[in-house]
Length: 76
Image 1 (cartoon, rainbow, N blue to C red):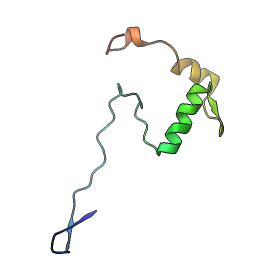
Image 2 (cartoon, rainbow, N blue to C red; image 1 turned 180 degrees about the horizontal axis):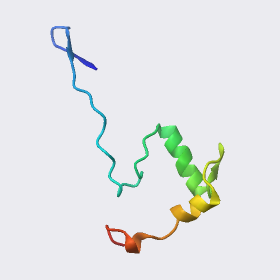
Image 3 (tube, helix red, strand yellow; image 1 turned 30 degrees about the vertical axis):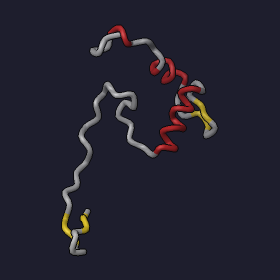
Image 4 (tube, rainbow, N blue to C red; image 1 turned 30 degrees about the horizontal axis):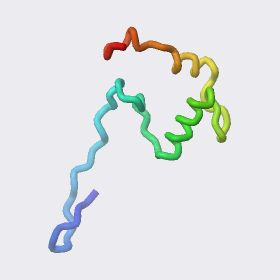
């Protein structure tokens, strides 16, 4: 990556990967495009399936929707 300087020249710009995700964030560490993330959320609302088809098994949906907040380090 480069940055354009006021005189029009280019200067190398430090570029690094983002820090590891915080597991307590709602996205759960997902990195994606907005449309794909919305499709994932749509599948969560649709029991694992969306207009694109099934992307989560029923077993995965049972795990994702299990109430684990009582045992979460963040608390209920």
